[in-house]
Amino acid sequence: MAMNGISGVNTQAGQVGMNQATDSYSRNLKKQIADAKKQLQELSSNEEMAPEEKIKKRQELQQRINDLNLQLRQHQMEQRREKQQAKLQGSVEGAEMQADEASAEKAKPAFRAYTPTDIRL
Image (cartoon, rainbow, N blue to C red):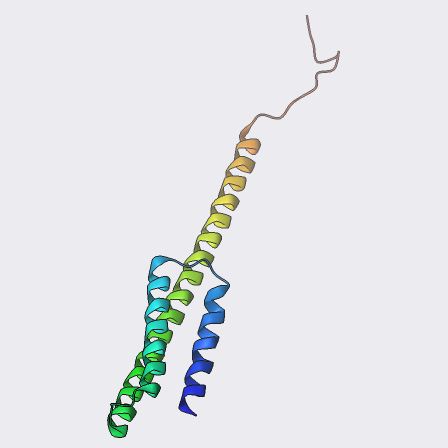
């Protein structure tokens, strides 16, 4: 029953990560999560370990998986925040360039058409 709760949490975090390009830090966290899940599965089939010891080890592994998933989510949120900030920074710089171009246009002397009466010989 506890394993179902753990797999549900891991599945959710895995789906969040699948939508993004993964960096080495994210890949490392995902590998650690997969390794801990594998250890959890191997623990269930371990006949040599005492039941009390299995319970303790299972709790430790579940806590480790939860902690790693939390780190992964926090890292992904930070990456999204940085990406959004860079996007906003780019649009601010674009707006500044447009404002500079508009100022330069205003500084240019306006074209004035001369009429024959303006020209005096």
